[in-house]
Image 1: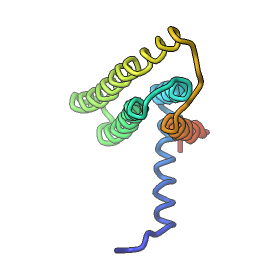
Image 2: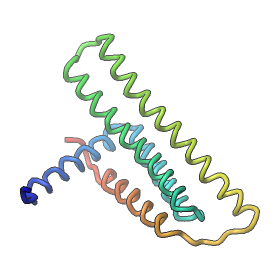
Image 3: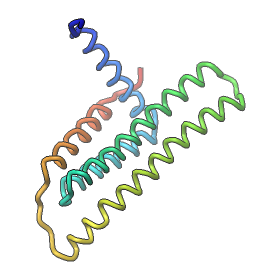
Image 4: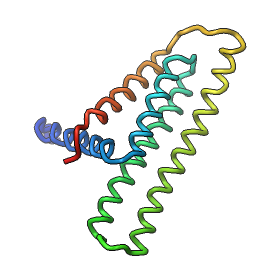
Length: 156
């Protein structure tokens, strides 16, 4: 087994962070998705949720972000390969955008299924702040991702 090369690993993370920042800086939908992710993270902190509910919400949030990143990458590659309008280029872009839309529908479905009963329970029985360890961990990760993305000044 080869030892991990710290410099190469660090560079890999820097490229990934640059990609996240680029998508955030250039794509309105990415900024909307990051905003929705932060709203979900705030609800994770405020609502009494089980670990499995936290995982479902986190999976939905990250699925949308992953799809938006893949969509941004695919659009860039299609623009590079086919600078002129082409029906196949349009199909590739439209299909990638559809993947983002479907993942967003999934996230809304999960959000309603998890958050709505918790909110109704609070309205019925009163509010008690008691974030769980999984909720705190998920919120920290989501807010950190948002902070990294939002640190973008301008795309390279």
